[in-house]
Length: 136
Image 1 (cartoon, rainbow, N blue to C red):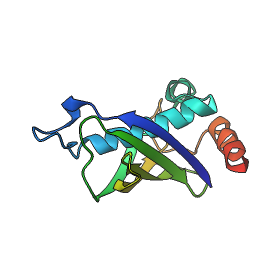
Image 2: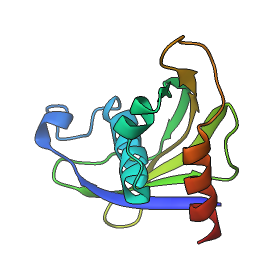
Image 3: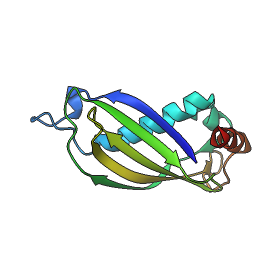
């Protein structure tokens, strides 16, 4: 299993007039955690694209449990139970600073050839990095 977490501060512009995080921002928080995880591995999204692979979101399912508020420091997690072949399934959670679950969900990303736009396998380079992360 691969696990990663990061902290994100809620900015006021991400909130409605009552200071509650707008639901659309949770998907951004999820993406931020996934990108930071790749950065921590030393293989950025930009490097993956330079290797000729893109990985757009194929699906996202989110459940909301309690509101996050302006100024909160959120812990956002990303967890993968198995190594990807043609798609990457990531379970994610958002907790407030009290440790209360605000949102959880599952995001599925597909691997596409940047040249053809057609489905492809996970790049070998990324797979090797993820295997090493799984063993840590």
